[in-house]
Image (cartoon, rainbow, N blue to C red; front, side, top):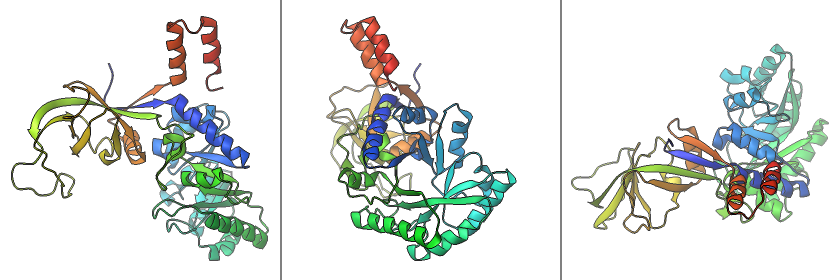
Length: 387
């Protein structure tokens, strides 16, 4: 029996996206790190990216990497995209291959943890490039890298920069050229090779497509493009990628005609916000077994025509289905496309199940049933899927 709510994941769609992004980046001499923090580095999804040719995975939480290290993945490089807190520093050696760092004291703690386990850790110094999140200012970068290079147990292998995070700053040819020039300057002033110059995230794809990324940059970190085929920071649906890898499904638990306006004095809602309700008269309303505990309702896009989200609480969502093409009843299932925030929350919720599908295999099976493919052809195609 199916469990709802659930996220249905099309693994072949993800493999297609990975292969296309990897191909573009290879044309421009770039490596790719698939950022999987939005899906908690789910093992099935990581394998889908590997089938698309991407073998470098990035996440901000070291605990997400534990299961990947326990699985048989072959060659897989894991990059920790957030400087680990001191309480987790002992987990980093032997679990991650590279870590982003921006504080010398934290780097010293990482070095001690690495030496205690008889190893060393590769680190990338994070550079502040205008987003105002983590990172070392460019004016302080040379002495920072020199000091880091003297810390036992760590090796500074490159630099990393972020855009499009907390302030939404866009990558431009100018700021990426500045990042590249900064990397070249620090190499010259420190004498270190700094072989990796890593930029992120998905929003930088536009520069790559138009050949405007600094040639000094060696690596792109991308998550949203691979997962959802979009770039939220610059409000772009990427036309050569697929947007249908994830669908959220939830069950209807009640359908009734009700007034759209509340009856009585109105205060804040259950989340402490001021509701904005438009009185549209009596409407047909469907209640779902879905809420803030399961996802971000504001980042959902109904796939069924004529549906509008009227409101949500922690464990209920109300839909206006008055104009819906389907005549929804209790027990029916409603489908949603998800923006990044909804995907992240759904993958984190213990109440949301996951179902994995292989759409290319499904197409092969359908064509075979219809007599449009022979059994021999079916076997050949299935063997080749994801190769």
